Image (tube, rainbow over all chains, first blue to last red; front, top):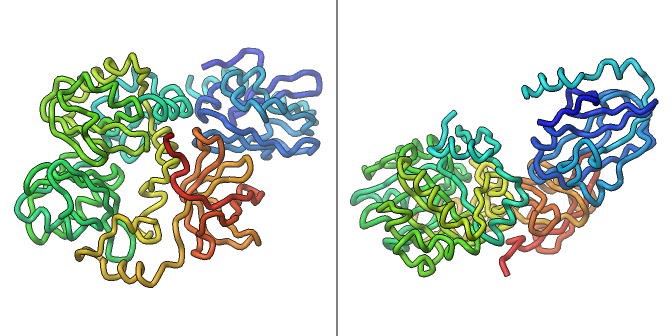
Length: 126
Length: 361
């Protein structure tokens, strides 16, 4: 299971990459493999400010549907619109072109609370 | 949790294993979409050994089957199979099953894995005529070899002319070097092919030879996820979703296997339902927009009034749209009726369509 060392993780199987005051968020390799073939990523919350653990969108795989949770509080400033046409990027490139949203985060201390790669690895028993 | 005799094989093939009906079963190997396409266009093999098998024999076997089955087993001859359901006394369905006539006074009943114990108890309780019953579920394995290339790919494994076996017919013959295998032209995919019944001790050899013979045809192992999308595209009912202890066979569109040419459990009430009409019906529907219906979602009319519930739903890999089955009020059950599906906070328009959703060209 691929768990890049330079990212932070949430217990809801999201990865977070911090760039200044922006957090880029996607789902982990483990999450995409559990979901199977992803067919839609629905995010209707662009420009909304949401709290940590609130639902910001939904990912639909052929066989199942799963909510997407805010790993940290903040404003959704961008959705990766490429996923509207190519949702399969979440399966094939979960940590790259399969990113989902950019969040302008409001509380830097929440970043500290995210899981380290080691802690996430332990969480999924990899 | 039980394993099928092919558990190690699935693990070696890197299958994702999930608990299903008391068994560790392969839900997918490579991915549901590619596996689905493989069965639609080529050939794939499923281990469905979790299914239950009962052997009913003796001079009273037919009488017992006629009592529990909605279909008319006197239409069976040796080498023929019949789809049926077992109605309960309260208007619902105990299980759906396939009945094979193996020889004079001997029938094989193939039932859903999740219902083995319930079905066994049900049939035993109605066996007042003392037919001989044996539960051979733990001794027998079942492989489904499905797809338009199944006949050609498997022909080298048997002396039976596979192209000559008609749909819902079977032969007992040699297959993959094993004698007395049931080779049945049945399946749950709508893409043609066979189901192979053999002993647990033989199934590894059969699997290996099937994979070997199918290699040049691009055969792949197929998991339960694709089994579900394949059956749903055909509009085939799944017990536990679309039919259950409370759904009527008439409401479920199973009137064609409910024959009032004989008496069976609850036949009088079901006959009255058929004559007087039912208040709801199982229909197929397609989403008009990009959205996927799922089991349990509410179905609404165009005014927003609740008219039913989704019993099965998925993204159709063949059609690229969301499809589903669900019960709706009779007034909303005609083909082309516009309905809506409540998906999270939105009401998404859908259309009632004729089944199957998909048909082979």
